[in-house]
Image: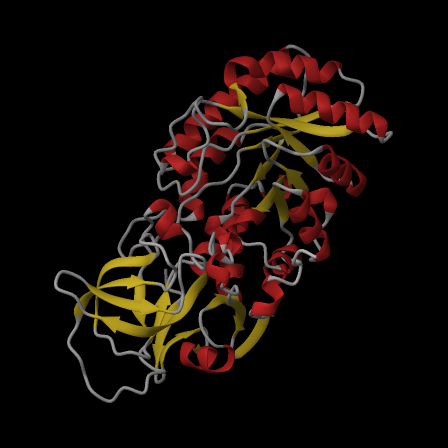
Length: 424
């Protein structure tokens, strides 16, 4: 993972001690590394360059992983496109300086208003996920006097071998068009007056640690592309989605971008189509952490609890997926003067739910007031945060060398009910 290093003042990100971040911005707080974000995006570019495919490829960051404007702006500056799933994400990308012509719009439930917004913006492509969506999009494009560029998101019925909640390529999933129905739906798309068939899309899931399922899906997609070409439907681009996994547990194997892409790129080397990829987690996951402080130590007969000021509303993944995040003691920022032995702790938050935990059975030597760093929290952390228990969402800070940038201030309690009103 390599986000943190040990300095004289404890753990640090780039050249900034996490204790300094806590002192200036408080906790809980999300902390990101600009260098780590740039390196992660660069790894995709380097892998494509090594295969001679960079110039005909578009790497579209999956915005749902982390939609902070500063992060979107950084990727836009690096030349990224964007994979969006809502009108709100479209607005964010445009506000952050992203180019509409580099946006692909995925998602099973696009509203007519969102379709119209994306058409007016001039996005690169709609990834259509059902026959009904295709017909609706044709109607919206016609009423707008436009022609909608489309790919069909084809569901190849390939087991991604990941958590069932983030496996999207099986025929039981809500996503995409069934592989057996895709050819006929392409024929229908080609006949519609306000639809321009541009490509094909496939995304089988997230947190993929083995490139083999993605390569298997690519084989099925390419066979369909060739069948369509024989029928007179020539596609301009092939979108093989994203989903490359990251290391959450120290020592856990995780592929590099080069290793993950290699089997797919080998299959695409002799083809003429442009290539699109949609990485999300692998660009931001290990580039961020959640900084939190121990408020209460609560020993028990069977379990010992460390109650921290972060909670499930700040980081939902452990409660939602029983996900593991490494948790490290920052090593500074406490007023304790006595050494304590390491113990096995349940790291829990103050939210009124038994499912409010951030880590089970963590061996740590803790005092009240200690700072903890919950690693690999850059993806699906702040993006999934809520105000449950009327808790303000955390601040977000970007570290750039020795400089701290506040990229989202902490919410205030009054803001949580500012849109509400009492009855007369």
